[in-house]
Amino acid sequence: MKSSAASGASGNPGGGLSVRQLVFGSTLKHTFQPDGKGAGKSESLSKPDDLTSLGGRLFAAFQNGVDSQGETAPSGNNDSTVVEFTPAGKVVRQWDVTGKVDGLGTDAGSGQVIATVNEDGNSSLYAISPASASATHYTYSEKLPHLGGTDSVTSYGGRLLISASAPGTSGKQPASAPAVYAVTLKGTTARVSPYFADNATATVVNGPKAGKTTLALTDPDSSGVVPSGSSSYAGDFVLDSQADQELIFTSGSAAKLSVLKVKQAVDDSAWVTSARGTLYASDPGSDTIDAITGLKPGSVYSAETPCDAANAPTACPGPGFPANSLVQLNLKTGALSSVAGTTAVNPQGLTFVP
Image (tube, rainbow, N blue to C red; front, side, top):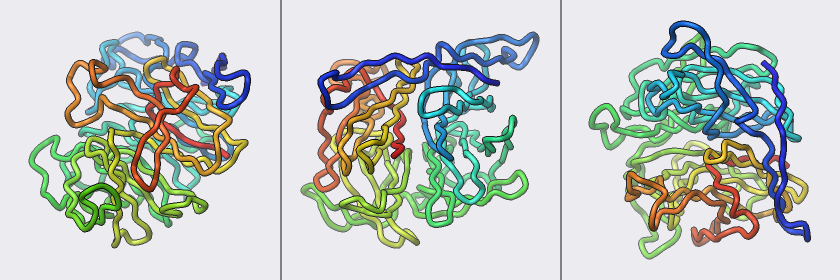
């Protein structure tokens, strides 16, 4: 299916950052059978979340109201939609997959886009070949030992790493349950093995409790690879444990872990490696994908998500828990600072394209 996206612009005409709404869910449609029955129904795409890039194209996951264990949306829809688009915002193709896509990444070995569905339970994944009109569905080789779902997807060191999200959703998980799985795809099975555990030993690098600690991760979420030119953690794999307000860095075999404490819950983080590059952000509140330019190389940006903090109220945003915002991350101190010119952006997913 092919669609075209309108675009709008905002930002600072005098220089500095520029923000442009690039892709609009309201202009894109998908068709589904309500509750899997009867005549097809069309609706606009909504609730974009994770983003990734492959071969010069961008991919975004629109969750369309499906809930965290694959529960049907109020419209009767059961599908998320993965949308491929150009850096200019022209939509190329889209795929409907059953469940809520919360993790989206690429498999460097196969050249496929990997989408995990249902981050709290009943999880599985899809592999999408951009030239294909279909997506291959994979089920996990065993009941996931952390008793939750799966989320972020990162290709790192020849491994496909997937975060073990929402541990303990379907029962009390062991303390040593995996925080991250290494996953191998064969046939239609995704075979899992642990990469590092929720209770792994790590070194806290900032704050009053710096030093060795035993992790107690409750919310493994987003992940990525730190660019080789970064001033800190160059070449590392990074996992965001969102509600715990921790970023965990490691390299190679995951034998050595470093923990950076942050003052607020964050989702995706992105490293700016080129002055001419673009930071893409999903905004589920406005159902848009935004493009941000004019960023300084070497900077690190995060999506601050107060409503995902462990103590966030059910009714959120609210007093003391504002909507998401784009912040700059200090890799030494863990400080998060506001970014001028981006108040209109309420990001969830981030990806930087040089």
